[in-house]
Length: 231
Figure 1 (cartoon, rainbow, N blue to C red):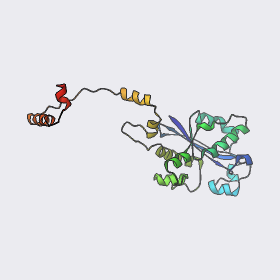
Figure 2 (cartoon, rainbow, N blue to C red):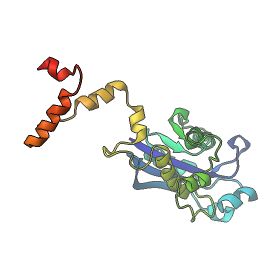
Figure 3 (cartoon, helix red, strand yellow):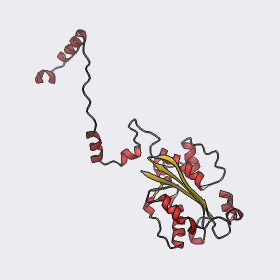
Figure 4 (cartoon, helix red, strand yellow):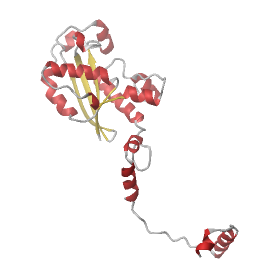
C-alpha cells in the first residue's frame, strides 16, 4: 500500500475568501515506511501575505514573489500523488485549498474520499485528548524539536511517524503485519492465510522409560478419558 502524507501552508483559513496555498509538502510511504521520496514546492499566491499567516509559517511576500504559480507545478504534483490515499492532518482544510487551486485552473477536484484524516484517527484512538500534531508527537515521543515554525514538508515528515503509530506501530507482530492490515482483512482472507501455512514434518522427541511411566499414570488417573475409549 502506497500512502502520500500531505500538508499545505496557506495565506489564511478560507479559500472562498481568496486565500491561497503558499507551500505543498508530500512524503511517500510504502508499507508504512517512508521511502525517502518527497515532493515540496513554494508557491507565489498572487496576493499579499497577512501578518497572522506569516507568523505561523514565516513565509514573506519577498520570499514568495519569484516562486512558481500553482499552474506551473500542478502536473508534477498530480503525478507524485497519483491515485493513492492522502494522509492529512485536518483533511477538510487542505483538501478545500487544493481543490480550490485545481478548479481555478480548470482541473478536476480531488475526491474527498481519498483523504485519511489523522485528526479523526487520533480522536477515535484517544477520545477527549488533544489531537494537534504537536500533541501527538509528544504522545508518541516523536522528536519535533526542529518545528519552530510550521512547514509543509517538515510537518508531513512528522505526520508520517504519527500515522504509523496511529496505524498500530512500526511492527506489531513477528509476521511483519501492522494492526491496520489485520483489521482490514476479511474473514475469507484470514482463512486463506491460515490455510496457506506450510506444513512441517513432526519432530521426534523420544521419551525415557521414566517419562513414559509418569505419562501413562497421569492418563490412567483421568476418569472416562478419551484415550481409553479410542484405544
